[in-house]
Image (cartoon, rainbow, N blue to C red):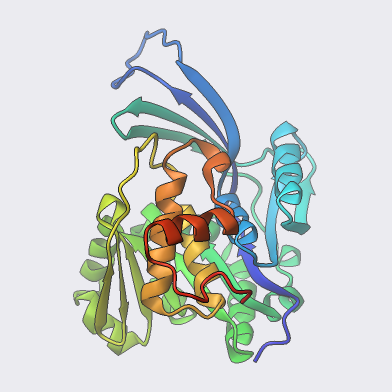
Length: 318
């Protein structure tokens, strides 16, 4: 078992989000649109890190940000949440990853974003990764690495797993553009995807996920949005139902699900329980915009008890 420095290392894809609520789509050339409201918040993998931290994990982030106001926002926002930024580097002349999110009502949204400074070999802290109980990265992490940097990152993942760490990967919408996907998947323990990404993954491998989970020895978690979630382990499917809430926006719900599932899994909850808790955390997230609606541990367990789901020892320290 790994002699852990931290519970979870979140690698790259830290984003500053700017939300604008508009009356609807499309917004065409020449339009002058006044937003009903605007919110600036942390997004991307920052959401995963903050969720895991609020639920009780010791979390560190590995990434680069620019020497700009959004870089300040990422560093200050993560530190305020108790997330270590010791391995977040300020890049002189660089600009922090940003995403403009247009919310059009009825759950519709659109994104316009930029990627921040690429990671270098020196930015990959092998000593931290190999002594983390869990490591999370996504498809955007891979797009922000050269092959040389990825090679060092892969060494870290391999050593971490040999030490007993668990590696969690969310390929995201860039799934089909990931080079050497087989090698990436081989380094992971749990792969988290939404429904369309899961279909694309099955298509790429020309096999159903249930079969792949047995063949590849991986656990797949499929986020079904308003329909709940599905975990597939060793060929067995376990379905977890959704929670009915009033949705303001679904943006960020998948990231909160990831953070909550990882927290639950690393805390010793079983697969079905981890999915149920992650479903609930994501449901609470969609009631608001940005990080403000990410639940704390106390709120999550309180809502679980109200729903009749919590076991007698769920809220015990884990």
